[in-house]
Image (cartoon, rainbow, N blue to C red; front, side):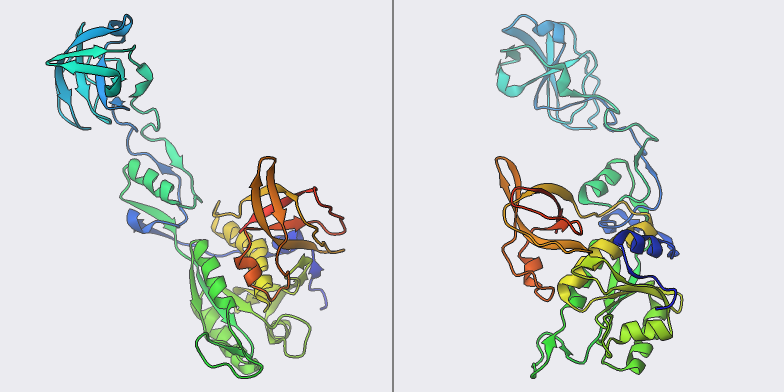
Amino acid sequence: MGDIPYFVELAQALDICKQTTLQTTVERVPLNESHNRILAVDLPSLVDDPPFDNSAMDGFAMRYEDTVDVPAKLEVIGTIQAAGQEDNITVEKGQAVRIMTGAPIPNGADSILQVELTSTENNIVTLHQESMKHFIRKKGENLSKGQTALEAGTYLTPSGVGLCATMGHSSIPVVKRLKVAIISTGDELKQPGEELERGQIYESNSFGLCGLVNWLGHEATRLHCVGDTIEDLRETLNQASSEHDLILTSGGVSMGDWDLVRKIMEEEGDLHFWRVKLRPGSPPLFGTWNNTPIFGLPGNPVSSHVVFRMLVAPWIRHSTRANGPIENRAFAKLATKVKPTKDCLTLRRVSIEITESGLEAHQRIHQGSGNIASMAHSEGMVILQPGCDYSIGDSVEVMFL
C-alpha cells in the first residue's frame, strides 16, 4: 500500500475524506419543490408572525377587568370571523365581541373566554369564569420581521418548509442536489425479475444506496452493473466521473484477485485510504477518479449500508454544510448478549423496545453482513467499542435506522 493509509480508525478515515471537498452551487426553487433540500443561506422572515394580535380560541373577546366577578353579563356588539377581516370595532366597558380562532383582536379587548364557558341569549353573553389573557397570540411573538428563523445548512423537513411559507417566501435558495453515480460490480449479479442461474444472485445494493442518497436530499443514478473486467470498470468510472459529483461503487474492494475496484484505484486512481476499523464494513476505500470523489463500498449489503451511514453520509453533510438529516441516537439497556470485536468499532442490528425503565435493545436476528433482512427488520444498531466486554443490562449507544 506504500504511503496510503491502511486499516484506519473511523475518525481518521472521515478526517481524510474531509480533505477532499465538493464544489457546490446554489439554485432557487419554488417552495413546493423544496422538501428534503438543503437551505443555502440564512433565511430571514419577511413578516412578523403573527402579523397582528389574534385569538387562539373560538369565543368572545373582552376587557379582563369586566370578568373578575363571575358570573358576569356583557353586551355582544359584533362578530369578527376571519383573520384579516376589516373591522373598526372597539370594546368598551361591559361589552364583548364574538371572535373566531385566528381573527384579529378588536381595540379595547385584552382577553378571551372560550365559547364553551359562556352562554348567550339575544345579545347578552353570560361568562361562567374569568377571561384569559394568554389566549391572545401577540404580534411577532413567534417571529419578528427580519429575524433569521432558518440558518444555512438546514435540511428542510415538512415543518421547515411550512416555516418558510409562514415567513412569506414563495421560493428559496437551496444547495443544488449532488449527482451521485452508483455502480455495482460482479459477474454474478442479475437484476431483480431476471432468471437466476446457478451461482448468480440479485443485485440489491444499488437500490438501498439510492434510497440513502435520496434520504440525504441528493440525486442518485444507478449505472449498469460492471462485470469482472478492468476495461468495463474503467469505462464506467470514466463515464461516471464526467457526469457526476460523486461515485459510489459496491463490491470489489477486498483482498481477492477479482476485487477490481481496489486494484484499479491502486494502479490508476488516486487512493486516499483503504480499509477502516469498522464491522461490518471494514474493506471500504476512498479517493478520486479523474478528480471526482469515489467511495468503494463493500459488496455485502449490510456492510455497504453501515459504511454509508458511518462514513459517506457524514462526509456528504460536511461537504454540503448540511446539518441534517442525521441518524438519531440514544442509550438503551442490553436485553441480550452482543459480540464486539477486538480492534474494530462494531455495530450490531437490534430491535428496540420501550419499557417503563427506558429503552431496551434486543439482538434477535442473524448478524451476517450478507443478511439485508437483518437491517430491514431492525429498528437500530448498537455501537460497540473495540476491545470492550458487554453484558446484559449494560447501557449502550444505539443508532436508529
